[in-house]
Image 1 (cartoon, rainbow, N blue to C red):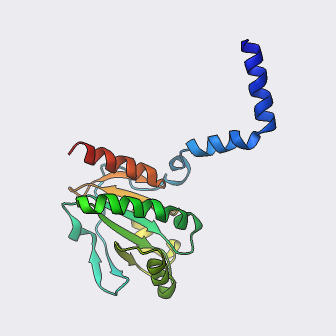
Image 2 (cartoon, one colour):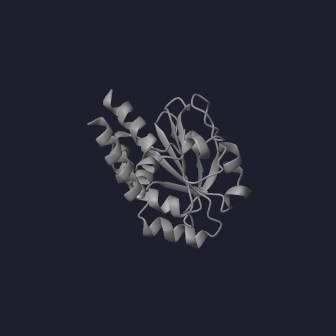
Image 3 (tube, rainbow, N blue to C red):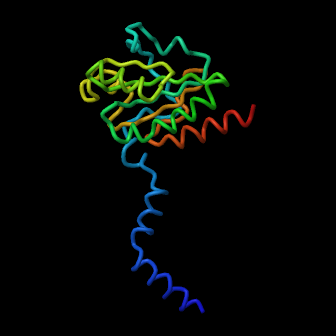
Length: 180
């Protein structure tokens, strides 16, 4: 019986190899490849001051005492656009519980950045240097080499999670608020 089951499994995978690849993709931890330069958990999140999409100064330190999600993204980034629904879902669930969300864009054209904010109805704080990632000081400060990248920062200003996978941020938020 075991031999027959092994044979059936082998034939199935030969006939449907894409299913096997899809299953591997779903469980792949992209952090091992793309998040290696991000700041590590327990480090203090560096303060920064950047301009909002309305042209006002915003400093990360103004949110101290709150859980904060930093979402590094750009309107030209296909992976970022795919993640927007996940980030918006987290925002809708956790912003009413006091979590602050900050989008940090690597757009270098203000009109494209603002159009994306409007198109995707991003109601949380949006800031940018209006520089591409490689030219951006905030990317260097936070070790961003890939977008989207995200951080969860605790009320004490310490990094709790650094990742390129939004589901890890969502899981950490769920754990924090389950215990409350």
